[in-house]
Every structure is written in structure tokens, then in C-alpha cells.
Image (cartoon, rainbow, N blue to C red):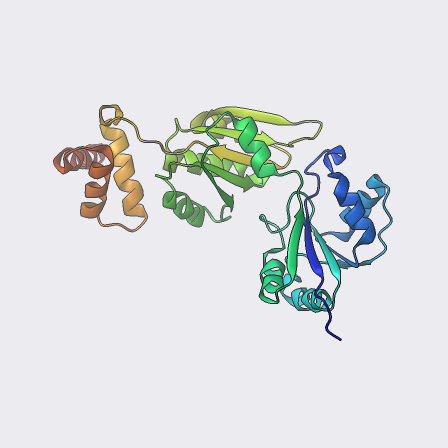
Length: 287
């Protein structure tokens, strides 16, 4: 007898307010054969809040055991089980465990579906007041300062709105690094404790936000940053031209290529950008 493969269900969970739980979530929690949870204690609190008693087997599925547990879950799926994957908040696999399991399930021709739910990324974008027609999600930045700066330099000229997750104790350093790489006047929004009692959205230039965050911020954080945009050539002062060249140099480009690229972006003669770089270098030496 041929066994029909089961179904992997990715379930979005509330990012704060439990009343945001989609109605289908309770049904899936009650009927799944296996529930793979990032934190089984949080799962217990969620099911209690929703008045649900899971009938299926509950297993932990987090960053530390994701690789080892995936084959076990795929075996259950291939055997016909309905496996529900839930993470602590939001949608599984979006900066949470899940990608490995989805990829492995797809490889075995197992059906993968989702229970749509709240998303910190989309909620922050909508509240930011920044353009949302085109955006890219960058997840968490590296913890080490040098690696963080390198990652930011990779997207310094990205025109789409950028979205990041960040830990509260690193927010001040991250915003300062963003101000250094993107420019202190680049617009941004810090979204804190979304959908919770102390929800706050702080909007302003990166430089001002970095000063605010230096005093310490609590809660779960999503940062939305305005894209680079293309300003008119006459609005690009010498300091901005030099900054753009330095960003490219620090990302590994030779100075000659960096100057040519910045000149092309700004619609200026290469000589004008070159002169600005030389003047800045002379000012640094004399200073």
C-alpha cells in the first residue's frame, strides 16, 4: 500500500497581543499529529491562552537541534503525518527555525502550507512612514562591530527600504554604525514592542535615533531604514561624495574604481569626485 505523504504547516503566532492569533491556529494546534515548537514552554502558554488541548506529540525544534531533528520530522511527514511548526512569535523560517525543514520537505515532495499570522517585518514597515513599495529584509546584523560595519557597507547604496531585527542591548551600537555608513540624516524608524502594551515607534534621522538609543532601550526591536535614493547631483556635496567613495573602498574596491562608480551614480565628471577625495585627504593630513 502506498502511503500518501503528510503536510507540513507553518503557523504564524502572535508577536505580542494573543488576540491577534488567527482562528485557524487553534484548530491546527488541536488536530496536528506532531507539533514542533521552538520553545515548548511558550507553546504551553499559547495553547492555554487559546483554550486548546493538543492531541498530537509535541517536540522541541530550535536552533540548537534543528539539524538533528529535521530528518525525524521529515520521516513523520513522509509517513503521512500532519506536522505543525510554530516558533516563539511571527512566521517560522523568517529569522526563526524552519528553513531546513521546509527545504527537506519540498525535496521529498511533501505538501507545505501555512497559517498566515502577524509579522513584525510587515507591521513595522506599515508603521514606519517610510516607502513600502519596495523593501528587503536583512534579519539580524552580526554581533561583532567590524562584521556589522561590513554588512552595512554591502547595502549602503541599496535604494529599497531596509528592515532589520535587533536585540535591545545592541540597538545603540547598531544605529550608530548605520549613521556612520548610511549617513546621519538617513531616515529611519525604531519599532519597539509591536502590538504590546508599551508599543512605541520612534521616527527620525539615524543620527538622532542613535543618540536616543544610547541611553538604553528595552523590548523586542525592529528597525526600518530609508533606502539610499538617488539625489540630484547638485545636492551631493563634497562630504557626501567622499563618504560614498570611502564606503566602497572599505568594502574592497580600489580607489580608482570607487571614484568612477560614485561619479557614474551622481552623474558627475570623475575629476570632480577625485578632487573632493584629494581635498578631504589633504584636510585630514593638515588637521
